[in-house]
Length: 293
Image (cartoon, rainbow, N blue to C red; front, side):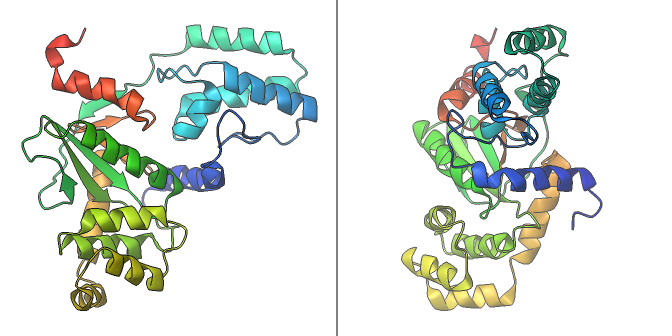
């Protein structure tokens, strides 16, 4: 499906290589997603990790470089800065000179990417959602049930929507990545649950068990979610939801989705971490545009 979108495949591959690190704390991990520390001696490696944990990314995210690599692995700014740190350490440069280099790069950096990009149309009719249909803010989440980053982001998105029960609507979009062998099966199962009004219980169970999405377990999760199992099995056997999954993947590609999770706030792609404390000021600004500077 993605043979005509090589850029997306490269981004997704990078995310997969980093997925094993997703559960670690960026402040204590000995490896950093997308950063090649091979070739550094133990002292240099320790220095690299220290710098990445202490120096700021220049993408506008207000996070440290290492933190940004963990929380926003698609960020090209933190990846480039981390690569520069490693290169200078291999060249024998001092920690002080490397910190000075980062300061200069911050001064010379082009305008940071927008936190919210220009809005694009995203159809949402009939999609799984929570929150009022007339909410002032609509969050659209393109996600993959087998993606480690998605499993971390999913409960945060639900918590964010729950924090604004009258003003935020959360819409879920299917975006199974082709290298995740069980993602499409899980997507179809979630849509079968949606057909019975049980999407969110199934959503929670699938993400909580994203490493164990066997056919047997999916049936188990469906039963635990209170589904009519005869209808659920018949719907899955019919492959009736494949066209829905294909349509939503295409919608994501047209909207600029290059990996998962990707979220849009009122149609504007969000570039940043999915931490509620970071997202809440953005939601507030959408709710109260007159307060924007």
